[in-house]
Length: 386
Image (cartoon, rainbow, N blue to C red):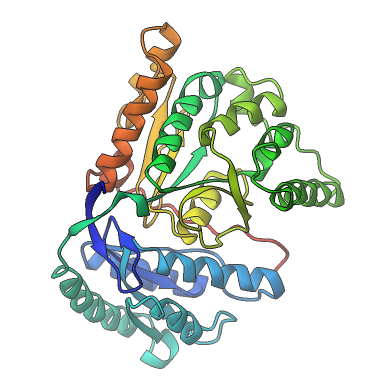
């Protein structure tokens, strides 16, 4: 059994990082959470604009994403900070996360007595919890438990020709080890959904895949909008992508060749072993945040135009097939497979280089986004606020 060094969690999952996460239940708690993060090293806060005046599916989504992020196996402990009057229930959120066996503390700003006292109280809790997390030691854990999201953003013509197919080879390697791959971006399989549908392991899963695409297209139609101009984006078009079908065909190559074992909702828990599709937007940060909330340990992110973004609790590996962009944005890029386009690097060797990067990052190597402190986080929303 192949192993990496990681953290054994109480619920049997494995973590490759040991974050102390500070969660605001509502936008009103953002500043307090951010100040605590600034004052206590090795903590991560996830400011967001939600948690108040939400109803129905949107209220549930905010709760699910916050809970899922807290339950991510890369998180060792959580501090939840509420204002005290929002629609997201902080006690229910704490109990949901605590069910995984993690350290969890919760308090509200109104009861503590305002921002200054809340920051002081939060700093005290964070220092104590961080010290406890620092006593946890890494141990050998099975590589087969690794869950990796595959994502593309800031795509250009090199994405579909080089970086995405190479990532697909690496995805197949992880699945061969017994791990999980999750691909998302419902908006970016449109025009190629029939190709993915043929790879679904059952007729029911195939119908689910078609259903989420149809659901999205009907929502766009209901809004009286047109995807063209938004997808492909102006940057995609400038980078040589002419149609959504062309973009989609390149997009789907990053998940490899394995059969699709299931279709899951945004931020839903990613099952063990195999390839899964998560219904999620093409928006980079919303998509990656949904994968993290679903339990992904790492996201591999291909880009031809270049993007610096990372994620709050999971490493994001940046991969490109665009040599000029790699040289220009080397501060942000982890893997360069542009020699594929020069004919001096084979698809298999390029895929192996990405696979080795995944293993190294899972074993503790920091990505460029982690080194630079990129901790972006965003919750995809469904409807209007009240």
